[in-house]
Image (tube, rainbow, N blue to C red; front, side, top):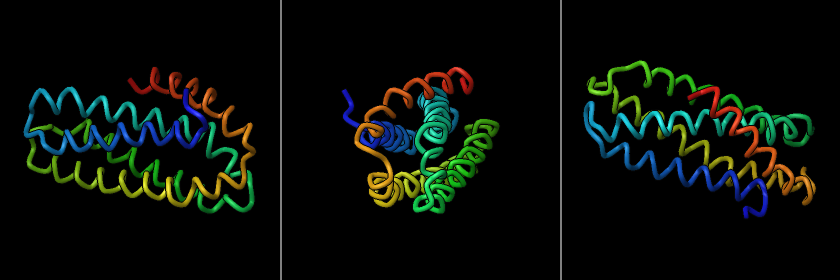
Length: 150
């Protein structure tokens, strides 16, 4: 069982990093790219939307975390726009992998920023009980969002 919202979000981040590394090694319209990119895209979008609904909604409401939380939500929207672009692009096109590299750079930056900057701040804003409760809410929201994006 995941202890708190931070470890739960980090679990997804680790999965996203792994999938991104594998996809970066694929080429053209390969089976690997066709299977793994939609999986990454769906999971990242469901994760971001659940995170906004459960985690960031409370951080946006707190004065001390509002600016940083707003920046992270903005990054979610930028990442989602690149995902949509890549889903619409031919996987074998010359620009696909270059654009995917832009996506992974943004994703890695965002995840690192969350883990290094947002988590410590949120740790001060949220109670211990709330950090544990959020795991259940996050998982439920992510399941709901996964049905919408798939």
